[in-house]
Length: 311
Image (cartoon, rainbow, N blue to C red; front, side, top):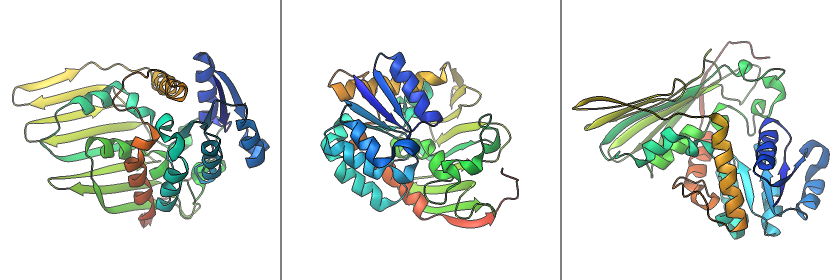
């Protein structure tokens, strides 16, 4: 299968390498060099397209691919404006059931375990993720990245996997408030955000930050029958009920999630059998999650600023 990967940043290169490893004929195309005209022309020789550009320039690429009947793997988030989510949903409809959104955390064995668990007694949850953004990669500057842009950047969009997890585990959640911390050097960009969510019988928070010195990623689900305390960073997964504590063994190799997601995309795009992962992020099935992310971004309330120096 011939796959065009648009966007030659770190995530685009990862997808290109993984596609090649899986036996696809992958072509990596720099958006900055090709632009919309070059990208659309290149699609004519592709059986599938991976869109790994900055969020604010994806819509015309999705529109062009869908118009040519080419299935699409779109990096998360799908969009940051609610109106754009709906526009993409309409434009991509002809290929949406053969396309995917890049929510690779759905291939994490611990996320699979949560999705298979009985969570009917949960009344409260807290999902958190964060890491000092200046330590992410060598020879990389936040100020030069897409994340530093007011339109389409910021931590809520960048680390939105936990919002997707909340939307999947507890369908029908509504947003009560979103509190964000900004930075004087990057107006309109959130460096820490807390999204408060609720539905009948359950309340919860999703928090993300660019600031904490060591990676943290955790899901705590509190129910009257049992509690799940999953520490993804430490890879310790504990379930507590009246009989005591149980620790689950759920080992992970990080790139395996990317490979599994891309393997399913190739199967979807070619009409072959997928892995059977019930969480597979098929584009048309991920629209509730995409809507939640865009809605949260659109109602951010900046309640203060952080002082950490961000190069």
